Length: 606
View 1 (cartoon, helix red, strand yellow):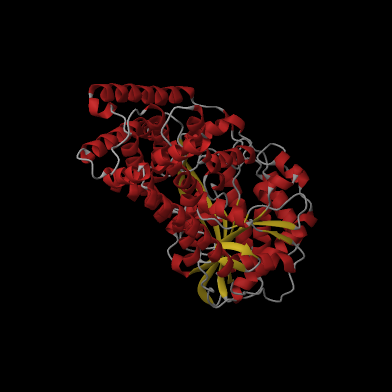
View 2 (cartoon, rainbow, N blue to C red):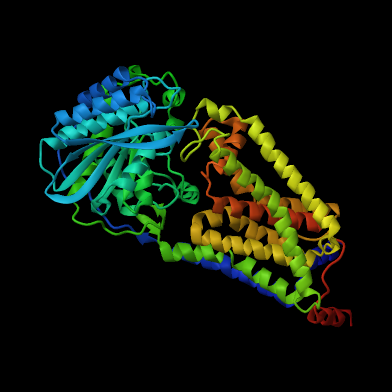
């Protein structure tokens, strides 16, 4: 009995001949074998870029004093406020005292529904060459925070002390010190600097400082993701780690898995992001609140005050930053390592050709299955009308989601939902815990009305109501394949993390309402969503959002924090899964078997 159910289940699941099923099984085995062989045989060794030998001149007491003066003298310096302007003037005064060529760069951005002014403070220490290094730390804080001593007055203190260190000697490269504004709202100051700096091609690399740890200060976390695009090159990761280690620190770079997750989302949270997006090697040295109870308790709160800062916590951080800058200054050219890689172990990584091969191979079973489905239903004289009917069904099911998304864009554009320039409000901002229920109700109403319209249209057009599982599966898998190809072109890491599970699981969805088949379909449908669910849970925990993470995701769509292309691909893929699940339950007939399969069945019966 079980053997018969197994046979019927997989016959109906794939709607394929025995030969086709054998080819698919062999292809999956070969794909698995090829991936294993690639992982075992192609790891490369990163190019060695050693730190220079130099005695650190960084003074932690001076950095602590500067950070304390900024925090206590300008405790309310959110972007666009009078306190922000006063803080910018104070920082400019400190840079002028060091005889740097100082300027204030103004820009504007949307915050909480108002267009406000931001100010980057730039101090330039000219070197022998025009080639420049950028060192930056943000001085702005959220509106609900007082002092912001850790995040990021501490980074500004280090920045100004480094400016003092390098101002008393001549460097090979020009050093550009930037106290950036608007970091809390999407790296707005750093983004404006990158977009407006007239000699961007002369920037060799950038180092962001955000922030000094108040506990276990010897641990320095590295970040290198670009703002929606790009990644710091491997040589810069290695150099930064070596610089931290050389001053008796503990460099904390992401694990291989975290590297993959970060590359898949590509949402930067520190100022290196806009530089990496522009193709400039950049990395952030900073703290991490997840392994520090004190940092977690004061981060983005009224408790982030100067009492938490001690001179000794600046030592390792400042010396590591100084050594990294000196080492970058000593490099004549960038080593040229690719940015498309996956680190495996220390100095070992998978490069672009091998990594892209693995990512493409994961979608080969989907391609084979889709082709076989079209071959099998293509001999039906009603092939084209059936395919067109299913395509129309898919567009109808997609329409409510896309119209609701478009409405969210419009509500932000009209400032009905308070407008932000790029990211939703900064972590722990009260706005993230105050859903705009009227806007949600409007979007939900449009969504429901669209679904009512979809039901009416499908009821009025009988061809759209004729369920045919084989045709539905062919068209839906075709849509999933198209989404996967586009996603691979945009971001191979995101494609494999979020779409490969669907590509590998949904080809096995079967037709039938009995408990076993229904359970199988539900497991396959939900299994493909596991990476996304785990990511949402992780974001909720890291940002301390709880169930408000759903509001945060809605804001991400509204503010285009998630690009329209990403939203469209995600919704289309979700619609494919929903449609396959629906058709597996409610379809009442299958596409006619191909002549080949009929002959095979007759031969078996004889």
